[in-house]
Length: 178
Image (tube, rainbow, N blue to C red; front, side, top):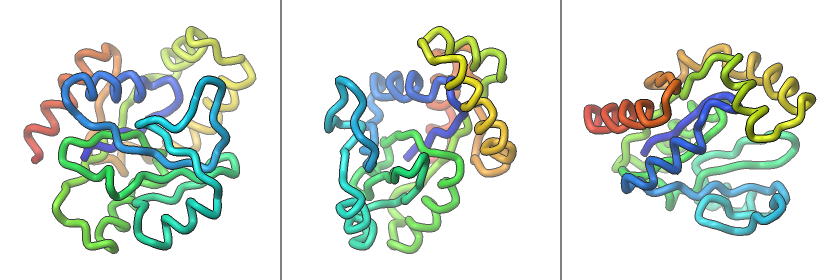
């Protein structure tokens, strides 16, 4: 199971989509946030009430319980597969691995990969996708704090200058560490 972490604009979602094209299965992220426009329950997101989310946690159905902007996010234990891949927030990496041990999930190796891109490039990418200047500044400021120790938390670091090269490097990491 690959867990990608990285700042806003680092290319995590693009990489995850390319990994899916190569046969990796996207893990289902459960969240209590409201769906965005044109977003509904999909194979990437399952939208829940906070009560439903907490019940899943209590029943051992979630590997992660992270809070961001007052909403909960979590990866379902049923998504934990050798050829699985997902995106998580940096704060949850240790929690996910500890929760897997707590739930006695030993049949799947969890590998965390920090997708790194320098700040100037991330700003360009966020501008290109239409993020507001205010949103970009807020994310950059938050990311500086959140990702200060990301390289120490992740099992591997992959620089995403070219997405195809980054994907090749991730596939190589997976093959060498299974």
